[in-house]
Image (cartoon, rainbow, N blue to C red):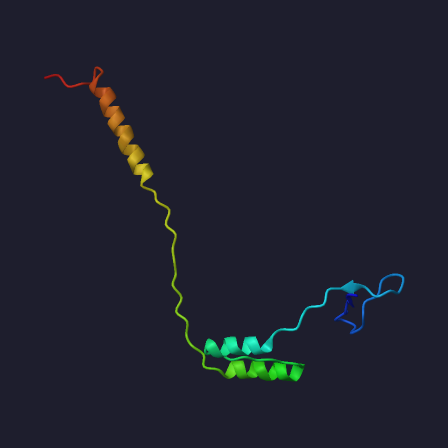
Length: 108
């Protein structure tokens, strides 16, 4: 039988219109030994809070940790505009080829 839904605002179990409990999926607890081992292998810290006070203490401890300055790399995306002068050069070349084969050609 699935567990009943819990209302975080009121702290009570949610009920349907007829007064029956609303079923929900229950999450499995985390494997804290594996999480602790992962933190140890990664040279990190493992925190576990079971109440609000412990969570606040964890946040304070994290805030006291050494802060490092992060240097950000900025990337700029350039839009290539070479095609406009290239188009103008081709237009002038075409104009020169047309003019060379018309009455504007040079007389030797």
